[in-house]
Structure formats: structure tokens, C-alpha cells
Image (tube, rainbow, N blue to C red; front, side, top):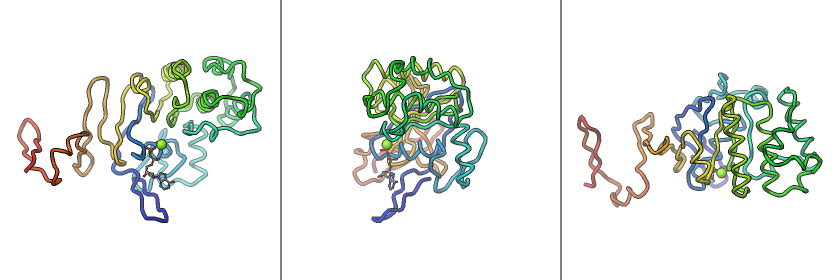
Length: 256
Ligand code: ADP
Ligand code: MG
């Protein structure tokens, strides 16, 4: 659960989300703007704490963790890419400098060249962020998040600034790192990302509405037995009341 306290009151951004993100898998998180995608991603990456509930990252329970423990989780286990490319980058560092810094934080020996090449940034090593296009900044942000193959890389709409060719290159990098054991969580509005993901989580109003694998979509039933009607179904219930019949086959909800 995630609640934000603001001047105008409480915002219940996430409620009753129950999900596991296995290694070697790509999860796409979709949902309308304001549905809680970024809030969920920040918690998964150890950047923010849930208001309630348990969150385990790489075997460490980070619910209620101190800032120091969270920093360690971020350094060792997770990589994060902010939605706005420039938020990921430091103005005075070159592309090379960003990669060196990421490698230092992750205590890994760097082979950034192949990563930069894979992402089409090979000629840009000495450029600073303001000399890069939005798409190049986004790819650099992604490159520094995956340095050293953390357990999990969380990226907020990572292809939003990319043309289809750069997006394809980025998704190819995702695929090859998945084979090496990295788990990816990508929030997105991009059908290509959804297509390549192993599964898709559908968020609506901060709740996990459905989960889909390949062609099959399953509704999610939360701990208290709540289920969110699929889009369009609400119109059948203008009074917001329904009759529930349970039999051995399943559950049927009809207007009164
Ligand atoms: P999405 O990424 O799907 O657009 P967010 O996680 O950004 O959704 O937002 C979910 C809800 O939480 C929205 O109602 C948003 O206005 C609110 N929200 C997000 N971040 C904050 C914050 N730092 N302070 C207050 N409200 C926030
Ligand atoms: Mg968002």
C-alpha cells in the first residue's frame, strides 16, 4: 500500500498489490496515467518505501528499512531508470563518466563499450547530457542502470522518447540481459514492450486489476476477495449493485 499525504488530503496510490517478480523475466506494467505505475516501480527499486505491506528485494525485506539498508539494496540489487531522461543524468559528466560512476557504485569491472555499442551510443562517449538527444539520454540512463547486471532493473516508460529502431535496440538489450539472469520491470504504454514481456500487470486506480501472459488475461483477486471489473463492464451496473451467484463452475455477477 502507498499513501501520499498532500496539502489537499490523502492519495491512496497503491492498494492490495500482491505480485512476485522472478529472475530472468520481463514484466510490463501498464495502466492509465495516475494508476500507480511509477509509485509501484519506485518501491520495487528501493527508492521509496511502501506505506504498509511487505516488500522483499533479492532476499532483503525492505519494508521499514533504514536509508542505509535501502542504499545498499539499490547499489547491489536494483537499477532504476526515471521516466524523464535528464533526471537520470548528471550535467557535467560525459557518457563515459556516467558509465564509470555506475560501475564504481556497483563495484564491477566495466566493459561499457559493448553496452554502449549495443545501445547505439558508441560515438558519444565524450558527450555530456546536453549534447545528446532525448533518445540518447534515455539509452544512456538505461545503460548505466544495467551496468554489472543487477538482480532487477526497473525502468519507467523506457521507450517513451525513442524512435522504433532505438526502441528495438533497447528491447534487444533487455532480452540478452534477461538471459544472463536479470529481471526487468518496465512501465509502458508501448505495445512493443508489452509484446516482448513475459507477462503484463494491469494497474487501475492503484489496484492490480489483471495479469496477462501471452494471449490469456487473468483477473486478480486480492486478499480481501475484491476483484476489479474489466473495462466497460461497469456500465452494466449503473446503480453500482450486482447479484452474485456462486456455483461449482464459478461466480456470476448480474445487474439486480
Ligand atoms: P502513473 O505512473 O501510473 O501515472 P503515479 O504512481 O505517478 O501513476 O501516481 C499515482 C497517484 O499518486 C496519482 O494520483 C498521483 O497524483 C499520486 N502521486 C504520485 N506521486 C505523488 C507524490 N509524490 N505526492 C503526492 N501524490 C503523488
Ligand atoms: Mg508514471
